[in-house]
Length: 177
Image (cartoon, rainbow, N blue to C red):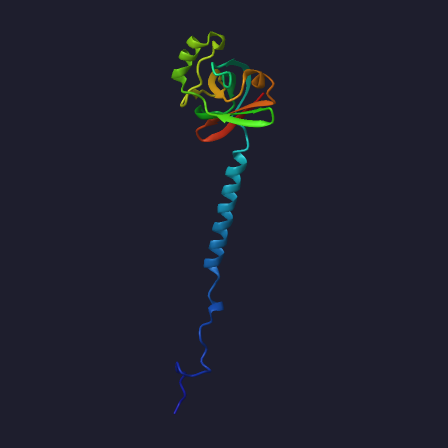
């Protein structure tokens, strides 16, 4: 009787997993490397600043309780990008007498009321509003109103005042005085 190989024959050659090309793991490795490369390029392209600017004027008045100040911060922002910048919001931080205080700006509609109550705060700059657009290469002056729980003499001796202006889809602009 001839001996034909059978599935039960130990000598019959079985397909080996190593005989199959390593195509699937190779494709996965290429995909993962491409994903890391894309993420790195996005990270590096985000390194360039979309805007520059400065704090141009800070005016403060002491409130009736003598323990708080109302502050108008004027700033100039320049769009360095090729597309419009849209203001998303802002935060401020005050360092005075070894303490840190933070505040978000009052609503822009409140600023005329502050000017009426405290004429010393009057500014020619328009309020910097949420959703304000700054066109490419345009320069815009804006003012925000904030309040801190410090006396005016402490505010006047401040160590620093920082304003962070946030934009939609762009890095924030940090202004220091």
